[in-house]
Image 1: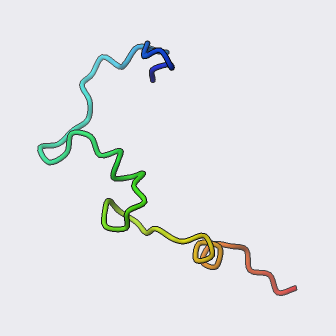
Image 2: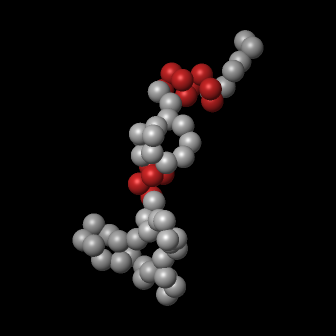
Image 3: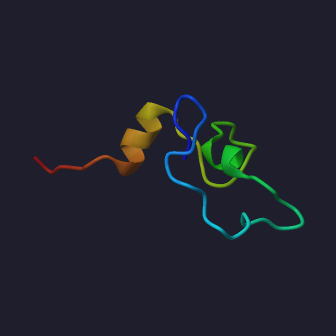
Length: 58
């Protein structure tokens, strides 16, 4: 990782970056909130809470 000044906090590993012929860098796909990009689902907060929230019988 780099610090706020762009200098390496620790040196990068000596091996090359992991990449394929189709993808050089896909981090933006994982953090995108566009439901048409990447994998998984994007939920509105109420839908997220309904699906993953704790359900109590009390």
